[in-house]
Length: 114
Length: 113
Image 1: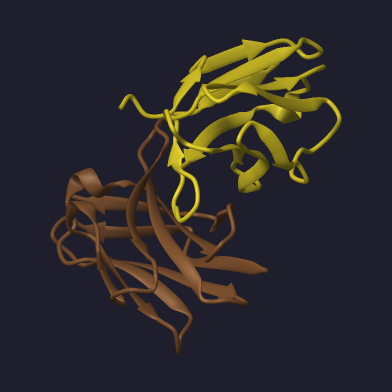
Image 2: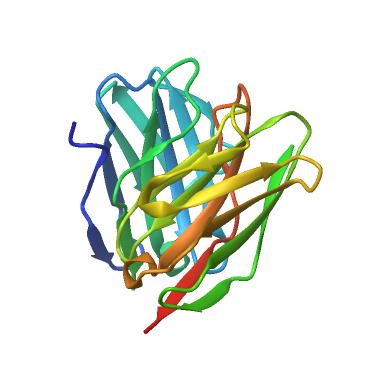
């Protein structure tokens, strides 16, 4: 299994532009998570999905952030418009269904908003 | 609600010395506990996990951790540090049936030659 795949690995964009981060979870996993990692706040859970349905988006910082999961093998995290304070590493993780305990992480997307 | 506290944001050890990274947790239910490692520019990789079986858990790369309920601790140890162990280490907790992990703030381990 190739693991969780995220793209792009690095993204540099100008303030005000739309940014879309992509994630392909491990095949067969029912749960998908988006995390953000910054020096100031550490790892924060933004949102998670179960069977493509958003379950908890309480960690999404603002309305500028949105996430979708149109099918079991693909999810996006969109920031529109982007701001410099959104600069961070964004991780996608997935987990199997009932009875699982740990999450499996992708390599992350390093976003820089200038 | 649960939380994790990692004591020491930076730990330095000499190559060959004992590694001890501290983690204390708070949980209203019996917890599942994890240690993850993050190498530079990489994602998080699971080192080991405690899921209410044996209290001494062995993981990859020679690491182990002991669950101590009375101390609400889950410290990570390795008898002899290697240069390749230099990374950031995260402790995490989740309730038994939840689908969310709560992470500690991380400990950066430096291994000195």
